[in-house]
Image (cartoon, rainbow, N blue to C red; front, side, top):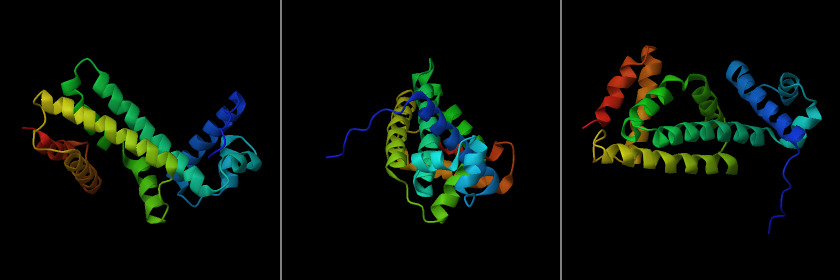
Length: 184
């Protein structure tokens, strides 16, 4: 049985958040090879503080991916909870594709480096899948998304839209064309 973890003090929570944000920015700008000491410097904390929160770089990677996935989940939940549930689906996907650039690059770089998602990222991914499933169901019930589409189809279409947008480097037109295949 795992011992109960005490909640972090306010200053420790703040330090942890600063470290994650600094690491996220550092990885987007300088790549995943940036040192923990450089991340500590950017976060305004000592190297020991980084190592206390994240004994390994893999744990820091996991925290960054989990944070990104949690942000996507919150946005999907907001689209689901919005006043016009049936219309939230496409704006969410369009926004997701439109801003995926640097965040997606970091996630892909981690995967290419053989970094497997840790428990935090796995939990965040599961929660995101649940909300996206509910968002898809709401859109299908309202008739704005084809009834024969499932969550894996949506994921594949989003990946295709991301790839096409990178290839074209346009303002989102190609992504809109690809996402349009989900409409009845």
